[in-house]
Length: 117
Image (cartoon, rainbow, N blue to C red; front, side, top):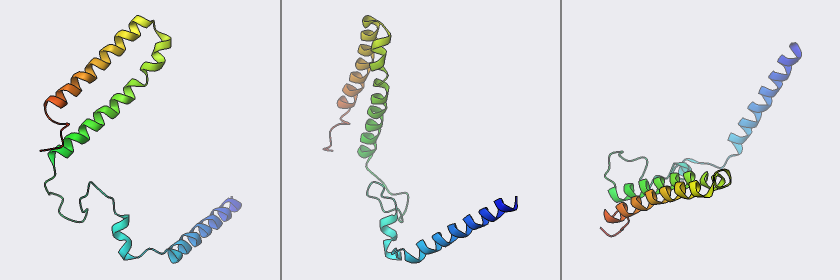
């Protein structure tokens, strides 16, 4: 038990020395604070949080997320081809693609894909 306590103490000392060395040798300064802050869509994170932003940018983001999820849902359809018969696989794939195309048509019809406002 005493051996484990000694090993633990030694490890903690080594860790603290390494952390102290990294703090001393680092070249960061207060002027680098802006570079290490998160970049969020061109907004300054240190300014007011309630500034207006483009609704069109939000809609494009939502469209991207929807299509990203849809791609994740398409991947299981590929191995499904080997497990079920061709007719059932074709019906499932066709139904899924039709839903995607209806959604794309709706977005196109609502001018969500048009950048000129």
